[in-house]
Length: 121
Image (tube, rainbow, N blue to C red; front, top):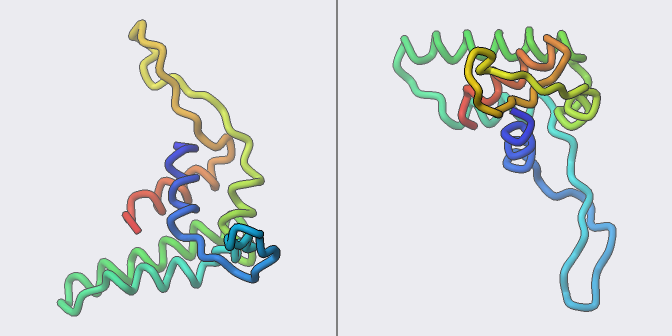
């Protein structure tokens, strides 16, 4: 899960202010914080106009607000991610397979990240 969340943050990130211009023409930019409004905006991009889809979309908006508020509504996604204590969980306790999921120890963070990943933004 940790890798998937990192990829999601990279996907949602947009470059901000240029902090350095390099001799080879490349630039180093600060990354803008990803706020709940940014995620809501991305969710609206995929919204449709059929009544049932509008209801599901509204349900997702409410769920996102509820889950994000449990982590701190004014925090960016990057701040929430950096607060995580990541633990290894063995999903196959009964099998002799060495495979671990790296998940947030905090239930609130885990629920938010699982929901964000389910949105396929």
